[in-house]
Structure formats: structure tokens, C-alpha cells
Amino acid sequence: MIPESVYSKYSQAMFDIAQSDNSLDTVLADMKTVRTVMRENENLRKFLGNPLVTAKAKKETLEKIFASSVSSIVCRFLYVMVDRRREAAITEAVENFIDLARAAQNIEVAKIRVIKPLTAEEETALVKKLETMTGKKIEPMYYTDPSILGGVVIQIGDQVIDGSLKRQIRNMEHALLQGSVANEVTD
Image (cartoon, rainbow, N blue to C red):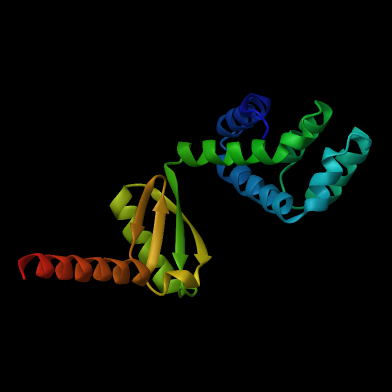
């Protein structure tokens, strides 16, 4: 685990630049692109973390991967991290930037577990309901989880809304067991 102090100043500097340029939405979208590529490509992470690879080679690789898909400011952010030998912290810095941008835009992430993917209409209705409930913009992240048996489990920050069939069955079992224990005591 990389200490927050190693990457937070880069995230904060990038956030400040994006806010002052009124480009927060664009930079946020670009940083999400970088995050996705970094998460999905272990070889890239290993390459960037290899101390035997030169900074020039790392920056050239990053340019080939990102120059056509993200803004030049985001590419420069990545190059600065390589120049300062902080390439091992790129993923954390990008994630921290995304958190800063979400907070500034009053966006809350909702981790939503479902048994099967929702339709577009169901997703829209659910997000609207969550936005009304929280008073914030919701960025949904969907996960398929057959173990919930049905329904939905939503986590927003520390709050969990468990509307799963699995929980309902567990509650019913508990109620039935409590009822049988109460009946035994009165018999």
C-alpha cells in the first residue's frame, strides 16, 4: 500500500488545475479512462513499476496508449508522475482525483448488487429514486451477484440497503424460530 502523501499532492494539484480551467467534467472522464486501462492491464502496471525501464520509455508507452483518448493535461499529469518516479502511485493518484471530483460535484457512488442485469428503464428509475433519497447525484456501479437470490443490495458510503430475497428469507427464518421458542416457553 502506497502512503497517501505520495500521491495525494498530485491528485490535488490536478484537481485544482481542472477546477480553475473549468474542465473538471472532461478531466474526470479522462481519469476514469486511465483508471480502467490501468485496472485491466497488469502488464502495463508492471512495466511502469519496473525500475529498469527508463522514464523516456514509460512516457512513450503512456503516450501511445492515452494520447488519442485523453486530454493533453491528463497525459502531462501521467508524465510528471513518471518524471518524479511516482509511477507506482499512478493508480492511487487517479482514484484519489476521481474521489475529489465526485465530492466537488456532489456525486455519491452506489454499489448495486443484482441477480441479473437491470433494463435501462429499471436503472434510470433506481438511480432517480436513490438521488431523491440521498439528495446527491448518484453514480451507479452494478455487480451481478447470484447469491442474493433476488432483489437488490445497495451500498452508498457506509449505508447498506438490503432488499435481497436472501435477507428476507433469513428474516422469516428468524421470526419463525423466535415464534417456536416463544411457543415452547408458554407450553
